Image 1 (cartoon, rainbow, N blue to C red):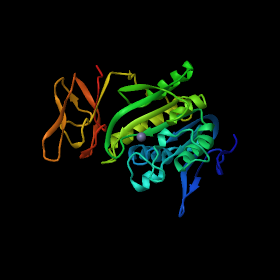
Image 2: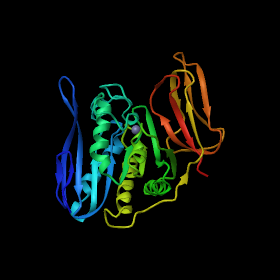
Image 3: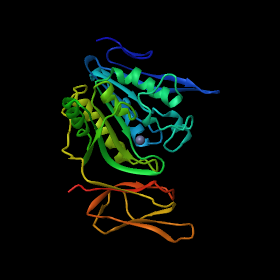
Image 4: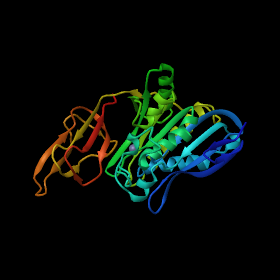
Length: 320
Ligand SMILES: [Zn+2]
């Protein structure tokens, strides 16, 4: 088995190497992306795992860091190329959704551009140096600054049925109740790698920055480990679930800005007609109230006091 390398970060057979991929410079600093190269003692598949594409989705970051720490390349057949935090600028600055450098959403600019602004360059470096080497890609996400999201996985859906099936299998490696089939495009999300490189892609979603919940970290972590087993990179049978595919979902956005009051918890089962929350104005007058249209589970919740029109408040999924 030969050396595994990502742009100068090299690991021999059975070795683990850490380094940084340079993206570009600002007037005072260099923006670079941390990468871990875990090179198995024997040959096999290469899995790419990304955390922190959105830099405040901390449960995803914690899970990738734990996987990097726990895995022993001497016991691996194949490789793991792992990025614990793709979006360092958002991570450092605690900015919501967008990079503080160029006000772009990192997960809308793949495959990137080597001549673009920093988010474009970051996407380009990740695709050209890491994802291009991979047989499959897992991108771990969760709630951003205003959000709390419960366990679900997006599986890429493109033209190749074989690849689509593997993506659904990968999604089923996470302990999820349901998965959503996501039509992959030429550009935009990291899942566009399914179209560009013909590799199966999934995006796992679980977590909130306030506070990081252990069960959300474990959701991503167990998924990563099971996907590694699924591809034979580590020993053992993957524990796969049989999730509901593309269940009915509801998402409610604020029609008017104001103050959001939630009456429910993430993961709570609600009955048809049950009150979910309301939006009031700055004098306390109710502007809007939301109720569950049918028996369902709270899968998304706004965890931020203020809200502007058009922003999401609560999401439901019907699992029966
Ligand atoms: Zn995200």
